[in-house]
Image (cartoon, rainbow, N blue to C red; front, side, top):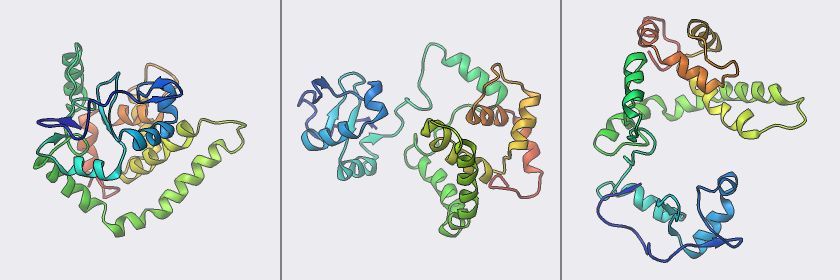
Length: 224
């Protein structure tokens, strides 16, 4: 979160070390398995300033909740995920405008009162009954993904399952099928032959024409 006015906790306590090295979440090894770092910080310095990124890391639930609720002081519009400005921001924005839509702060990167507008839409789409009705669909997706790597000697669990499961479920909720994605890829072939499902979805959804056509179809997901 972005600190607007004040900071929470003692931010001048210095770095905390793990295995003789200062803890930083920019370290690839720490990112692969952050839990020892979380435990160390939770015990010794629950409000921690990463010495490399300069970001503040909160490791206690009570602190995270307090920060999340304090929207007057702490902002979710950090510029890290959506609207970060770089040397090529103009080129990127031009590509979005030509082929799709400009990045927009909606939920994770937004603050009230604008956040409340988008949250209301999501709440309506994900009521308890609607989420419960997704159980057979999720079970089918889990089975399909496991069947895809069950005979492999070794897999990367994140690439083969953890990343693919929510993406598969959400594309299906939106009414996007594998056939839809394949058809769009034929019309807009990727520059590389090995394209992930996330890349495929981005290719599929980038055209404004698809959204217009989709709205004319019978109800088949949450876009209608």
